[in-house]
Image (cartoon, rainbow, N blue to C red):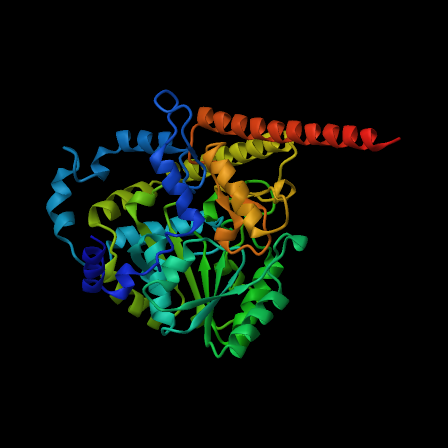
Length: 457
């Protein structure tokens, strides 16, 4: 049997059988634990609750309400079937004009109307995953590198490295300044790459940040633009969480807004990755976007998009929905409001059991600090704690090491992919776990005290 599997492997490519996808990471191991024993309030009340999946499920009622009122938006309904032939037969990889126009308009609305996007620069892709890989293919050769501030999304290793042969060089950020991206961190990463004879072709920034759940301030954004211009390298801005930012200050600032200011910038170096997976809660639609200020990149990315187009049926539906200004304005406002409420309740309840999180106002998650629970400041201790949380507390959270965080004890915890009742169950499990630890520590202290008293003459 072993020989048979070995023969099968030899029939496949190294890329197909290698571990470039990253499935051996704890990030995906937690998902596997959830898949084996998924929580259900009645069928599996003791199952694993999925808190490792960054999905926005808080506004599906608004989506469903709109769909019921607008049946013509789908070509698979009696009201919309008259458009079936035209939509189903279209194969143009430029995409439906109304789709590109609606996406460009939505991207502007999400950024507060402070910047406008050109529909002709909108390039489709199979989700943000496909958009990132397309950017890597367009901008770098195998062996070239992108700088990426840590901690960064675990899927970047798959999206940018697996099939492209591109390398990722970490720019180390630290908790002492709330993981701020500094010029020093970028310079050190750049020099480290040079010393290793690695050609740096770009810098990948996620704003709002995954996994930190915060946003970059204007000065940091300007510093980043200055850095990439000085080095003459590309800037790929992943802004897929743009509409998840709280209504409270500070406001989200896009790189597209910064380059409109009085700042020296070669726009040919600026590229944005976007999708509707997080802001609208549509990961299954695979509606990814590349928006580049570089004409050559737009043309190359559009040609490459043949491998990951958004279906015309999906384009038609999204174009109809996002062209409804009243709905879009209401959706953005309600989504921000509900995310803000969920984030506030979640962090306040964690604080009741003395768990703190990095101060943030964006994303679908919090960056939770459990360093005080580690038996020692090591990644071995982090993994030991993570296994307890997944296997005993029955919560799938993501350890910081899977996001390349160089400080053990941080965890990303998603809060928007569940209903209120499930969140209450998750919080009750966390509280019970913390109370158990306190009781154990109290017993240890009592035993230690008794031991010391017994030793006294």
